[in-house]
Length: 341
Image 1 (cartoon, rainbow, N blue to C red):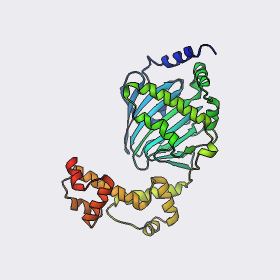
Image 2 (tube, helix red, strand yellow):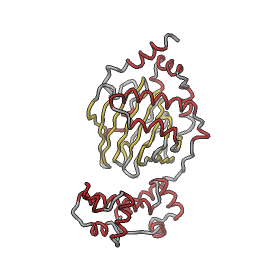
Image 3 (cartoon, helix red, strand yellow):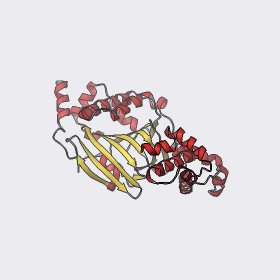
Image 4 (cartoon, rainbow, N blue to C red):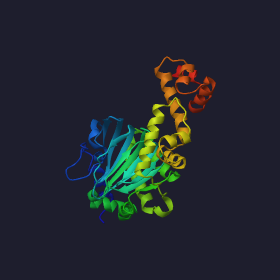
């Protein structure tokens, strides 16, 4: 290898004057993951671009950074049920996702479902795999890192080798199976959480440092020890659980028992409870309690209904119990919350 510092200089400067982050004819770009609903909002300083997504399920915003040749990082801010149901396979590309908050459902192939919750990390190869992501709670914030191995230059490979990053091991790691998920731990938190607090002035450089750190962690990762097998649910079970969710949220002021729901939707209580928690991250009771309080929080902001009227509207017959539940969730009584907003 020639002077490694010259290699590094070339790597860090080669995208300096490039502000076009639209899909290239001869290479992969992360924007392709988001489908036809993406529209560019604005360009920043040449290192990033902002995009807006909108469809019948909601809206989203993403910011894409070119990190190194063949490597991109995207901040995801989603308030929609899905963004792309027609994603195509991408040859020799690895996708890495970190969930900061919310929930993400990933469907790989025809029948493999995986659910990510806050703090989780997942990775997979997009080679020969068409997959789609949905957001069961219509709320997801996270980071996506993509690596297009075919676009990594020889100079970049030399720099990574200098830093003890084993690119071939990472490539093979992504191909071990369709999908690997690592549940939340301190290492994942250390890498990704700081990307949300770094000052904008140094963000691009900081992103580069953090991506290198991620690559080092992946180089040493033992997936047999660190990964957790994701729970498989059949497509039929997932569809029934989503019907139950739609029914509950449409009738949120009513209270239904597990037995009533399982009978109504012809699914065993045990499977229903397990599958509902798998999809939505909580029990039916806990999820609906939080959902009702979220409705109440919105009504306190947007309506002139009294606290008692709001309590009744979301299914609390006793206003005092509503006040206690709201205080436990939001840290203050409803009347005080309304004054502050």
